[in-house]
Image (cartoon, rainbow, N blue to C red; front, side, top):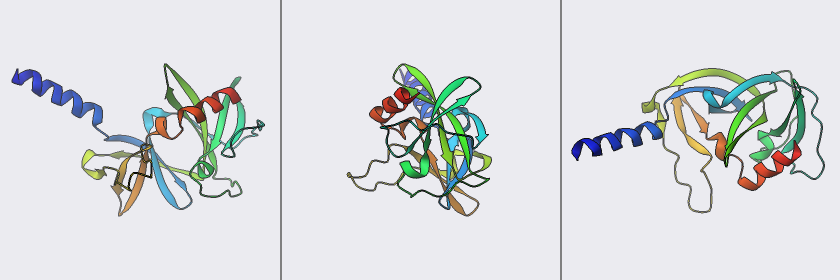
Length: 170
């Protein structure tokens, strides 16, 4: 019985382990990270076809090698205010787990920084900001190089309703 309990403990620890490789990027002078296994591609800015009657953070859709992919601006999603795109602005194509399927979505970021291997001991749990603030989309906070990087759970950045709007846009 003790061996079963120990095995269960190892399984739980493995599924909650946040250590690993993260693609880091900047938004409004803050650094963020997404698990590298969620990242499918990084592309430069390209023409985005707007889709009427979508939320402001939904920029539209792109045609990526014959596949239509919805694109959202992460700055607008996080209420950071819109800025003009620069030559460093890019689209990170990520894979999001939605219900029983995976969906490709492009997210516009200010600039991609680097891929970091972040050990478990450098990742803090998300602080509690009270019950009125939903922080489920924050996987943890990484203490790296004298600063803090916000690690995103990209599967939870969008609500189920917002994800449905994006899927319909494409």
